[in-house]
Length: 340
Image (tube, rainbow, N blue to C red):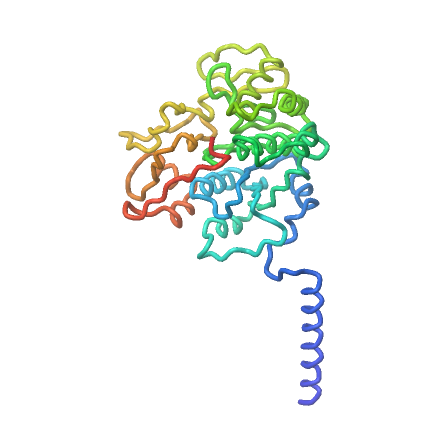
């Protein structure tokens, strides 16, 4: 009986070793990111036309805490939607970073409805007006390339798959009840930091055509908010907002600045101040923190009771708990292409 048991265990061990050997032959990276990061997996994930999209067009692998808060808050507000984070520094064979080296990356990848994908611009821009432009451009010679590549990618992704694009300094606070929308940064001026459309919407196709026809990398925002604004003016007769009512043109909603920009870019420092009473932002769906303006490196500090600290505690509690430190070890928001 003992010999039979030993023989059975030996056969099982040989089979396991053979499987592992075959597996390592097929894959040069045993502890890599899961196979759902493939392009086919992306199409299946976003096939229901509902998803939240974030972008990182630099090579950085560890998201700053504001990026982590943005992604976590979206995953919290849209628990039934996939939250897809495209990262240029990620590949299908990237080893999974350790928790100690990349705590934010590890935390985000562990959230059930957050999916990290490599940002392959050439593949994403296929079958769009941006494809020929991308193949001809010399990225290393372009000014503001990180922002321009982000502007191009977001248009193509939402045109192909539909859903909502958000900059990585946008904190979600309640669901957006619109399908086809642009966000007003000010009266008669559109942002491209957050927008949403159903797949293959003609407005986005025309935006991509205009992107190529009027391409100028020397003008910051020319392929971003300026593009959205000039195309919206072609589609709609823009008027001033009345009170806190949104504007509608054809099948596009132009959402009031209060929806995402209750604090304007000129007043961005107010996020880092202590308020007598925290605002309720009842008219807002999300808050754009204007991290691009934060050249001073203002920090989120545990125990400071600033507005931004309180937003973190409420809307991205895990980021706040794990990544935000006290005054002696404060963490500032690093600038990135999705922080406009």
